[in-house]
Length: 380
Ligand SMILES: Cc1cc2nc3c(=O)[nH]c(=O)nc-3n(C[C@H](O)[C@H](O)[C@H](O)COP(=O)(O)O)c2cc1C
Image (tube, rainbow, N blue to C red):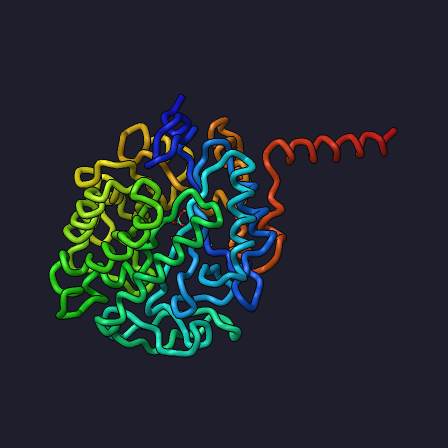
């Protein structure tokens, strides 16, 4: 049997297999208040499996941390029951749920963040988009954080982790990827500070460390993971030496003995060895620096996931889009069954259709048999 389908340990937890649900923001909370909706609990319950890890979509840690109308957040009491329903739905199937925590930083808009300018390590021109009542619109101009403000954001991470723990999540994942606030601090294209949070990489990881330590203070290191995207470009992010920067990040994280390091791989764009100067399999150059479990994500299919784990490049593989349309993805991959194609048009916003109504392989087969039976009954 391929190693992808064998048991492993992630921090405090034993898993039965290594197929992970990648966090996916689907913009289906109830407004106002970003209340986690019953269909979200259905969605995650469907994707849970005995001893399988599901990482729940990014939840903003405060109102000011929000980027997208309809996206999840976790900072007020009115949300608690909805989050608990999601954790319960995953547990009912014997699964493990981690909740991803995010601050959007400069990827934000005054319409969704409570009305004040978005914040970032530095004010660097940025042409991104945020989602408001008027659809995707250019982000609001942001400003550089005052050094005295940073502790408050770290505290918001701690409070969000407390809520996640109360709701029953097995752990939390710090969103250090995709050009949001933590990533904005790490990479030098967005961090031009001259104080202790900027300059050399040791300073640029200070905010990452503080946010991480806040989460660890609530959960313990063996129940906290971190996601990074060393080659990502989303959010206008860039670094002058990403291999050196993220090798350092991996080393720093290793010392905390966190549950896992989650790495978004570069997409292969016609060049199968390098992507913007980085090896295609970022997890391979991070591996020497990080001794714990590595989850690789981004563009995997069955064959490449099996290879990544067999070769030792990654310990687990997270799937996003394929998991969106295949609630029983671990089963399908284990038995090499055909996959239902995903529907991009339903990714961001909408209802249950093409979200929580995708069938398992067995249910699809049963529906086919029923349809055939009906046809032959009509023919009699
Ligand atoms: C609809 C959608 C929403 C996403 N939301 C998040 C998110 O909330 N947090 C995150 O870290 N990545 C997010 N991603 C990135 C995915 O986790 C994943 O890295 C990406 O889809 C590549 O994996 P795949 O090729 O298996 O889909 C999102 C991707 C999609 C398609």
